[in-house]
Length: 480
Image 1 (cartoon, one colour):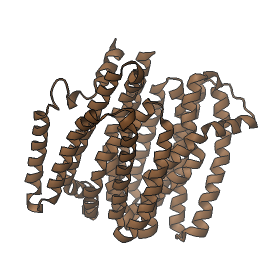
Image 2 (cartoon, one colour; image 1 turned 90 degrees about the vertical axis):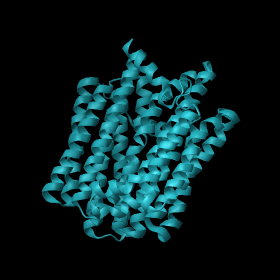
Image 3 (cartoon, rainbow, N blue to C red; image 1 turned 30 degrees about the vertical axis):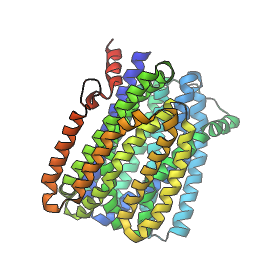
Image 4 (cartoon, rainbow, N blue to C red; image 1 turned 60 degrees about the horizontal axis):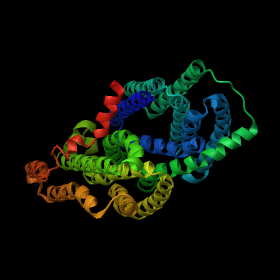
């Protein structure tokens, strides 16, 4: 069983990384083909679709993963009940979307059509993930990973081909919608063939699933609102061009967040198993992972400040020069985001998931408020600043809570030291004159690594390169 779990975890993590890389590659090419304004509309339409897709999504994926893994015989019952619930919720979402677009948005007919297309495409995409959640619950990670990779490959490839041939946003979004719908149908065919469910349900079962999934829906809504509200508010306040410029920087930042996602997915089982039986091992894994992520984040920020503008202008074309400047500000969010990924994982490991909901609620409120104040005055820089401040607030809240429960004064100081030193070098690099930023930044980076070495961060007992001993353990178990 343990070997199966390890294999599934590795399979899903690798497939998620490949999917995100494919998605980023397609976005990069689409951004180069379209002008900044059209790419801004593309980003805005996708963000709106994500918001309204939360209604039919409703956290059902998490409910299925948890419940069907316990009661596999209820597969058909859950699938049919949730599907009926989704039909109702899709109608509600479309009604709300239509009401907002037609009576309150003030958009042109063309922009409304594009939002409808993007939203419908996102609806089908989330339904693909709903189907794959049943394979995850049945420990069939290869099928889930295969469907997700197939979806990512088709969406990326078709989007690029249509963009190159038509250079028309309507055709691009239509093609993405058709691909998502086709993969959804394919997923249902695999579902019936591989799981062979017995379909039966009733009206009470539909409401039962909605009731059980409600906490997941609240959490997902808060997280998505917090992560995507900047794009929507920026478009509504500053327009399509500002949205396109900002979204490029945001997409690049999201790519770097794949690192803590994969690391924390690997660390969570070890933290959960050691939290009561072996406190010393728990603190060892937590401390090493904390320092590992902090060092990686600081190095990424240093490199982003030194090379970010040139890399963005080279990859996305000179039309997005401003995006490089935005990224040099937004990249500061990487360090608190990495820490938040790990601290959130710790809360899950010690069975404090309700706190994540409360923290997410406060973060969403603060983020929306800051965007409302800063975007009118500072445009995309205001959106970036709002994101950074919100992430820092979440770090403070989580550290404050975990200080008594998990950390103590000595190990907290020890774990924070690499991050604090890194922040110092990042600040020095940021304030250097432009002519000295390259050489000065490289010197700061090398001196930072040298200091970590002298402090013992690379020693055999406390190595950031060995910050994931659990990964070695997982590989050993898989091969045993």
